[in-house]
Image (cartoon, rainbow, N blue to C red; front, side, top):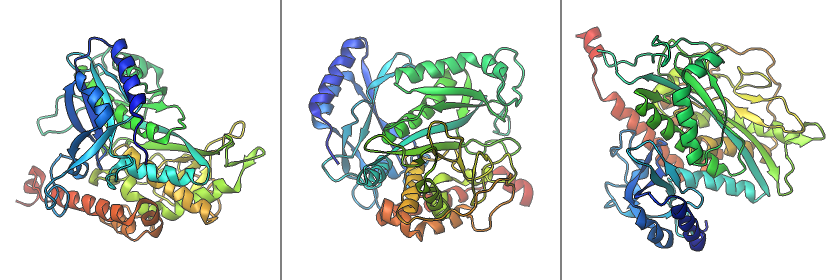
Length: 453
């Protein structure tokens, strides 16, 4: 770990404020285990001192529940006196967001430094894995793809989500995949999302309508900075949610918001280059054995990785089987979108693997960390992925945990993930998700009375 360059940050802040003289406030953001931002809003004049000295926030913020509440049995923030952790600004993350009453500065913060970082900070967990690649003079190149839904901002009388209405026709949106008309009809909100991304230096790519009504996908270009790619994915989710509010809509990255409609996926494309910029998965126009070994590692660690790729109770509703649903099998294949790990058509030796398993509700830092850990495990041990799957896969694999408790049990007993992410982190993470699961179950809703009263 290295501390940020104070002079670099000072110069960045000076140039930023000169270019944006009207800004009065700055939001400092960090990401927790659930993939949600926490932080504080300060006068913009505090940026200089933060660049030189950092700032303090409670370390327990990383391990709060989805609702931002303490969880039973989690030591941090309860039994330890709730001490502060020392945070540092992330160089290159200072930007503007424009969805509030007035534009504001925004900057990311992390505990990663020469000091001891918080071992349960998701950004630190991902950095550990990228450091393991760097020790071999290898550097991942990654791209995220995120699906999301737009809904009516108002719930039904029963508190349920309502299909969004087409802004130009006033009718409920219909599911027409890859429809340019749908993208055009929603262009006002989509354009606002893209503009907000540009203000945050988030480089977006293709925009498409997806299988569900109100469902869209906006891709990101390949990134040679894995941490920045995960940063941008988290910032993008926040941006979509905030911009939707401005348009009288509700945006959701929940994995399966509507049982009868397509779920939201978080697909990740990954290649690896060496210190000379050569793709280590390429071999004179063909796929190198390392690519297949990486896939072998992904398959070997897939059961243990499920609790990260599907971290919430709703996540497992997405794995329903069928060729148009999320992968539920230990499979790989070339140009096959029904397998777990797809090898897209490679042009000019651009060999890569696509992980199609995670849901959009997954924490991007942790989803990427366990994916890279699995790939490295496979390469280091020359794991054979077996024969590729060439036909559509619809059935479930009995060796794949598709319930939260089963997935957490697989994670706890995974030696490769313990070695890569740290046993302390694995145990805390599993305890955290199990505790939230218990808190969720400890609630009676109207349906229980309707069925059993």
